[in-house]
Length: 207
Image 1 (tube, rainbow, N blue to C red):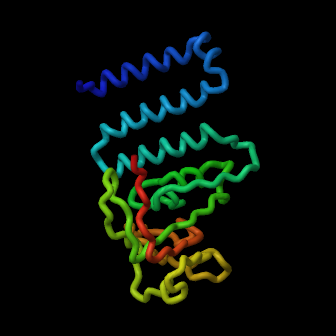
Image 2: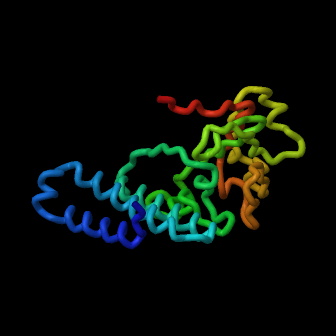
Image 3: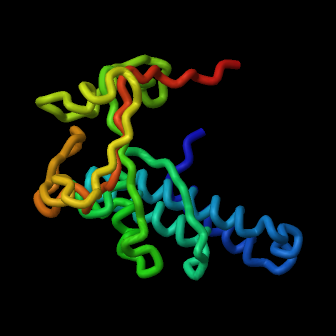
């Protein structure tokens, strides 16, 4: 049975009204927030499914991620938060026409200049293709000299980019294969690189 997006949206609206009822809120208690968060993300997913332009889709997705984060954290808190996202999401300035989630957080007064981004760069590695178990090559290292491999060999290597007089804080040296931004310096986007050679693909869960 096929259901239209409009029917799904109407169903979400009904659920939202149900969650607003005092009796339902009383039953859910402290779990109410979890239901509201899940429902909001289901609606976000529905809205994203209707966006065909890749740049607009990325903008909308990371805006939703940003709002999710703010919804779950205390802006007045001094707690530190650790997260793991895909490569582009950690860029702290606009790249490829998108303000990614780290960039949006960096613009939030409570987190301005407090976001630290570590970019994972793979070489001679493999991953599983989305929605299948097909193993495919993974190589996101943009290089001519291969200096990270020369220094670290076959072991992972963590590189700090924002040390005093670091060239990454003075120039836009772009080491990933994502499109290179047109302004700023490297550390405007990320402050560390974790170079990972020879990574094996994830092991799928099997029944």
